Image (cartoon, rainbow, N blue to C red; front, side):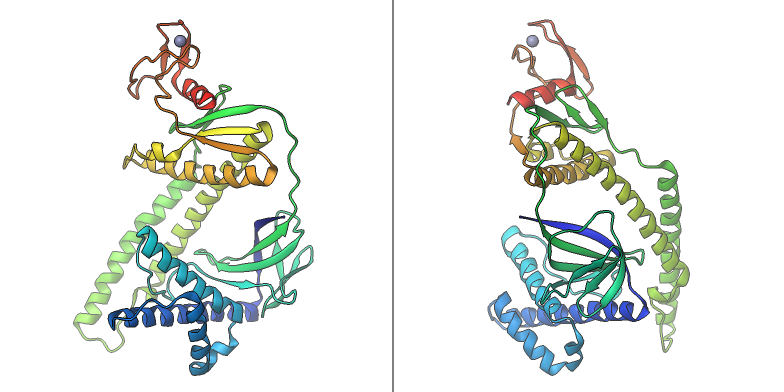
Length: 379
Ligand SMILES: [Zn+2]
């Protein structure tokens, strides 16, 4: 059995919407209370309180703040778990310190567990969720298997989603006894040792233009609003305005989020399509360890986008290989772009502008990237 996350769009009615938004608030409240407590303890010289003990504190919070009794109870336990993970990341991986959460953050979510079958697909378009009951949903695939938990999320564009964690049996893909090495590049996202090049995602230009249009407006409207807020403060207005009081600003923010979401969807669809195709075609996929790629740190936008796409593609290949019974091998080859994949001759360093070269030893001509992919395959 494999755990699989299935993203579905949900359409809560106004009552259900109010309940979801209230629950975001309860979770945020508990998060902020627990975080404030941890900080206070630390300031007083106390030790970090672990997840288990934080769960006790949640009980105490429920006694003190009775409105928390309306919360979906397992969702509050996820809050202590998430905070614990955030602290672990801070302690062990030196990531940023956990932050307080704000009502104004455009994306909100909470997670709850299935208890007594309270998360269920009732029919092709109805879903049962904890505390919310029956609501309409849409999903591109048939959901089969046991649902163990759900994340309910509100996107920056105001859409509601339920991400179901399903324990399911995945049919392995037939074996095709073929191997491939893939190199990841910038102009071409993926180059295979079979000589196939998959171009980097070309975003819809119209979409990028519209996004840029709204980004400019957003920046201008933010500046304007901040000026007016400063004026209010300077003149000691009784109820000074906040950024969220500026409707034009909020609209621009929503529009930028909308285009970001569409562009992200395009990218994800492309990468899913690509990883699925590679997995159907090959049994063993060899890729270069991305850590070596990351050494080539560069602040150019093209590189940043490529980095992001590589990471996503790599993680998709990882879990899809596991699902479908294929094998992903990471290799750490050296000099992939300078060694002849035909005879092994080392032609010394090739600068980035050299796209093609001929091996002086065996006379074969190489496409730089395809040669590299072949070296990855044989590494
Ligand atoms: Zn050669």
